Length: 114
Image 1: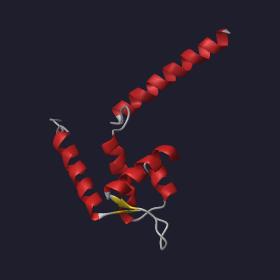
Image 2 (image 1 turned 180 degrees about the horizontal axis):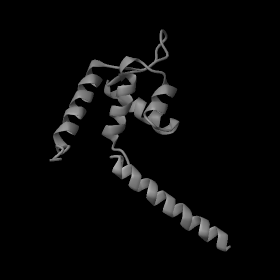
Image 3 (image 1 turned 135 degrees about the horizontal axis):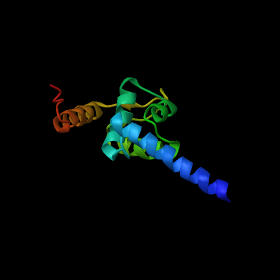
Image 4 (image 1 turned 90 degrees about the horizontal axis):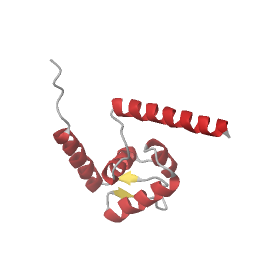
């Protein structure tokens, strides 16, 4: 019984250390819907299969399918058809990506290293 609690405590310590490292590298917490959608659109810029999108955007298949369906419905991405199995970012999707990147640049504080 003691070993269970020791392992549990050790795993919590490791998790906290990983979270701190992620924060230091600028990766903290959960991503927003906008960030996930932008990640998918970036991968699909030159066309990509579903598995490639999910791997590169760091998603699982259930979540990935939900976002792909939402992006197709919104007209930001084209889904597979009879001629191709891939997904492609539409012009509207590229505009969305530009808007998101511009917004990130706007809210990110400039480096004040002197």
